[in-house]
Length: 209
Image (tube, rainbow, N blue to C red; front, side, top):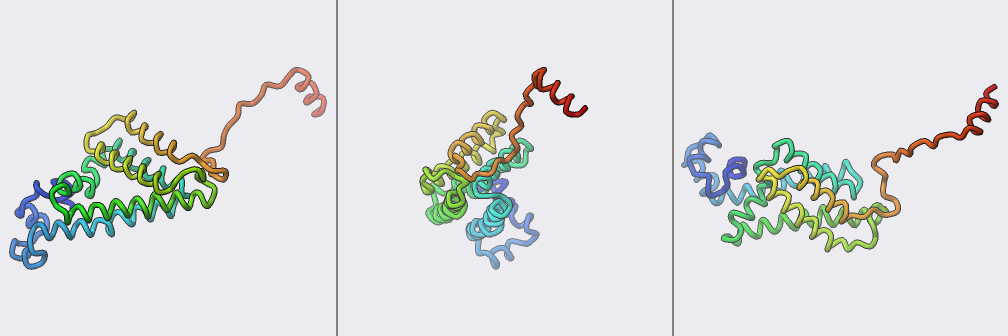
């Protein structure tokens, strides 16, 4: 999968595959059939190997609203650190192959639907049930919008976007998820201490004395 991810389907030759996998061409044909069949298998494998565990971790370690915010935060942080230059395998494939191949398009759309319904929509519904996300949101519509933002962010990740642009994604995500009555406050709000009046100081000193 990694070589298709780095080089794209068209940019990967049979020789690249046999060298990367450490097998000869005969073994590749016997095991997978051909380059295309191997590519299709890697697409199926991507959801189980990368997507599902990734989203499961976000759900497990964050409350619903924060899980969505954390997704975009992690990707933006990875872009800043130079860890996201290859983009997302499925989105790269959607841009390169899906317009010309209905089989690939079905796999890509199935993966997008998984993210939209099993992560975004489910987190919104759970957040609303717990009072963490505003009841005014329509889960299906908001989930679709968040998916669109995620795809856009992943496409931009290949072009080294600046921090201001990345921050705009974070701002949009939080704006799409207005907190409900029971939304946790991520950080304590610190208030400046009021300066005591002269009489208050005198009373405090007298009380101590």
